[in-house]
Amino acid sequence: MLYLLFFIFLLNSYFYADLLLPPKLNLIFPPPNLSVSDSKITFRGFVDKRAFLYINDEFLPTKNGYFEKEYYLKEGINTFIIKARKFWGQEKILKVQINRVLR
Image (cartoon, rainbow, N blue to C red):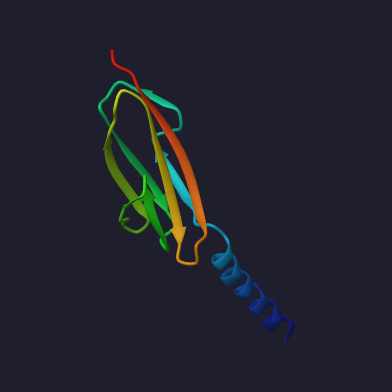
């Protein structure tokens, strides 16, 4: 009986954590505060499969949690806001700044 109660407790903890915690967001590339001379850059990473992903408020579909999207850069500092949002409203936000320098 004690094992059953412990199992139910663990199961409930898992579901409550899933409901309460923000989604996982792992940006593989680019690293923060990167300086480049290229005119475009490709964002790559993983996000929780149950989350919606936005880069600069543009919805980005994922495939099994993986995302990849290319963006053009203007000269100077380019700021990107990457947001993962679960159905219940929990969010994880990353701010990435990329400096494009002309050579």
